[in-house]
Length: 225
Image 1 (cartoon, helix red, strand yellow):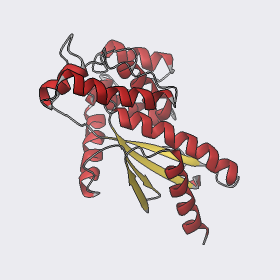
Image 2 (cartoon, rainbow, N blue to C red):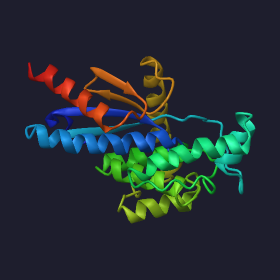
Image 3 (tube, helix red, strand yellow):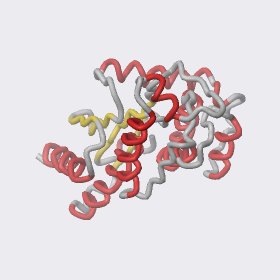
């Protein structure tokens, strides 16, 4: 997070790369922020702070296994039921230029990806990194636990990994991930995405840009008083 003392608004987002609704929710928030800034020219500084949340910290990468197969096994659902659920998410994604490809989305652990996000945020590239991770996971079907995938994202975004000897396994970065998880417990966050605005208002889920716009306006009115 950079120059947070100069920000008019701080939005903390707990989310996981393996969560399609987290991707949808962020794209909805982005649109809401664009509209909010147009309506409120004085509110141009809106700082987004990414917080780590792992839906399944014990998940392991299984080559060839897709999230569709995983859901059938874990949720005890038929392939048809899972496909119907996913097709609805795919259609929602099209509204935000998200290309969900669940037939090749792998099951994997997201801890190392969260470490990369923490690094990216320190360099002012948190949003770009998060989007890249979402795309590699949901669209390209790449394993975001694999160092080659993470290194490619870092290279594409000019994220400097040199300060860390083992950036994706660094003890301090992993501690930051644990601190995010602890904060989630303190806020009683049980699911993601979860958004906290100026530590005053919170919203859970992906409910559309209109809902996010209303929350932004509510926060503005409170702090303009």
